Image 1 (cartoon, rainbow over the protein chains, first blue to last red):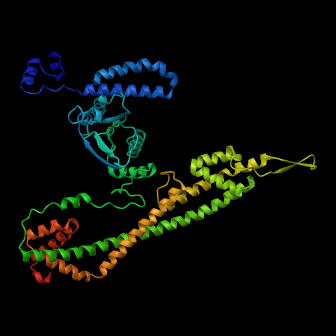
Image 2: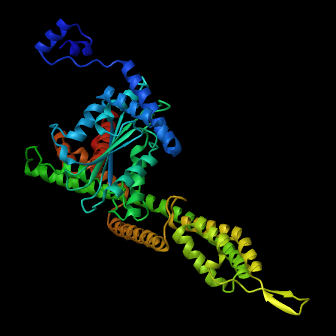
Image 3: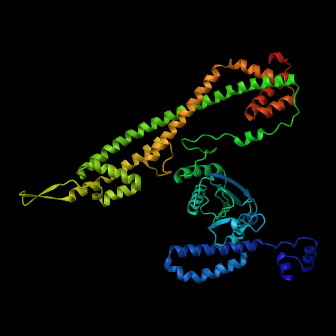
Length: 77
Length: 432
């Protein structure tokens, strides 16, 4: 409950009151979140394009790409 | 194939609907999905990624571009064909570098696919302009229909040679709705029917006038096209003679070599044909035997290097010849150059379709001209129509408008406008 309230950007009491009165408040999406997702997605895409262009670099960049993909998946889920 | 498109504000709602349906549980209707220019391949994450990119441009209010491509029920395209169609349409719309999600559905009798594109470019963050997107998409679809052998639809915004402008079926259908107006008295009914007859005659006259203008325009276009064809034909003759002379030096049977060069040209394209002439000239026909003197002229031996050298010097003539053929075929077919590689059969079919279409149009024109000959003079028809409209009250006018359809409705509107103007000017109805 506290986590949900935090995600909506509201104090806990206000979150409980609004949720009890109707629909639960929507999760707040900040511009910063969008910027981070966009930057990570852009970096991942560029890494994958580089790996596709130079197959020899593919094994070296694989861990970085996996980490980025994992991070991005958690961010957008 | 037909295309429809719209823009909207939210990625999530649209993508949720495409993947899970209105109820959120219709998962089996998705045949396949494809993500492009997105970091993650999972279609479920597409909306968030696209929204993050769209948020980089604060001025774009409608970042979602939704394009629907529907095939005819008689077409049974496989996934590869559908992907090819989606790819080509996106290329033509210049959305190749944008983030897109393609979702193919199988919940209808006809195959169809939805393309969700992010109007904001992922790198430059500039918004894509959808100006004339319907025209561009229709043009691509018409070309693809012909290339892939799918059912050819008469497009309203772009027609290939042999296509007609489709009638306004949907609007005509709406006009056939039952008339809610109460029936008129018999004497007024007769007046309205007479007005309808006069208006139909007058509209027919206008229709013939419009078609005659169209006919003149087509004749002018046809003349220009024929002039282009003559010019390209002369160029092709000159290039063909130069090519023959070049091949004559290199080959024992230059005509056969030219025929085989043509085959390769049409099958594999000009680059492959000229490359083969340069790298492997013996693959066309056998080379011309040249004898070289040896042992102080006492002996002559055959030397293929001379003919090989001549074959290589024929490459520029071959390139010029291929270019001249391409130009001539483009002029004959009336297409833009470089759009599609076609065969002789396609050329012949396009020319035949063009001729058939023109013959149909001329027949229709002749029929309408015969009908017009039995009508009175245009001034008399116009006066009659105006008098008839003047004699009706607004309710009868509305009923007449509903019963006669949009074209005649515009005539009524025009005539009514003139009648009102004459009343305002103080003229009586007999001067109309």
